[in-house]
Length: 232
Image (cartoon, rainbow, N blue to C red; front, side, top):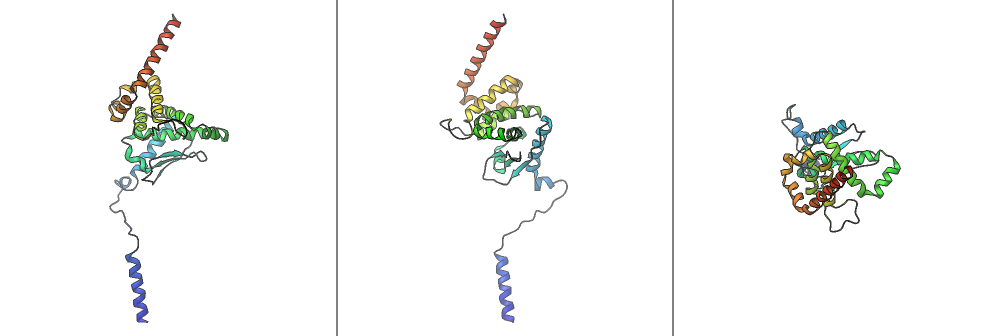
């Protein structure tokens, strides 16, 4: 009997020695609770629901996924839910940048309220709706008090720039950023003088696409001159 007890004790000790280590957070109080247990999730949630409230949007739950190795954000058409992968957070520098990420996905969620036919249209022409979500996100951001220049900054940091713009579900980063720039220049030009334009990522965009930007301004001046002649 003693031998059996000794053997049983050894098994228990061995099992304990190789068990997973469990860390328990200590020192929690009402002042540091969010910092220690969910500060990032709270910030993201607050930004998202500020956008929803300011734009009077329909319901779209927002969830942060614990996926530190995945740099992504997406929405699901069947439940309108927006998911933010935790792996994207290290690339985000401020609330304005996170606002673009969330607003873009909210734009997709709002499109999904169009029903089955609209959902199928989105699936069949995803690039068109990526452009549309970018511009709608800019509207959402401005209405909620965020700087839309952050949309271009995030795109410069995270969007793909494949050699060809065929196949896949998303357009090239350069094309998306130009459409954002043109939209901001036309509808919200005051932000082009904001301090956020000094960001190295925005400056990278200006340098890399200087020819496209010059072409846009030249065509804009041409249209303005034509309109002036017609008015006369």
